[in-house]
Image 1 (cartoon, rainbow over the protein chains, first blue to last red):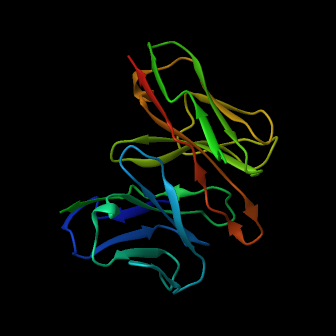
Image 2 (image 1 turned 135 degrees about the vertical axis):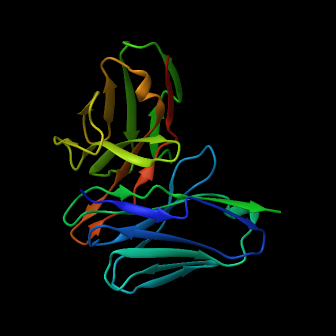
Length: 111
Length: 115
């Protein structure tokens, strides 16, 4: 079955440093979604990418979808303590009305 | 604007007991999902319902049953709880269009411990 892998599993950064998490799928994705989960909270949708090579920005967050639609990345510029949490990518197998979630990257921002 | 509501928020069971986790959404979404989240494992899909009247197995369905009671409600039942089912359970819902998957909206979760 489809597998979605994320690296790194954990990342500690000093406040102000940049952060990147990478997501790789074993199969081609029709789209990819990114979610953020704060400690003790529930996943919250951040963004969806659909087109090959697509790049979207949300303030300090930059999301990219690979040309082959099998990988994606999330880059945060100048991290803040409010960025703390676990970031998940998720993608559906073709024609599937479900998502396979990556294992997530847990970000800690040290003040 | 409640979104996705899960009950209960916390539960402690003994091995062999049964219970039902409830989930309701008020966003008129067609699709609903049940996930479990274990440390370091991310979210794993247990069952989902693409539309009212249908249910399908996800990645880890063993030991669980589901009921899509109506468009709003999707329940998850543990018939005979086992310690391996200790986890945080999330319900989610989403719309669906011909363009593909829509964002999933999650409830606050049920923290379930089985002794």
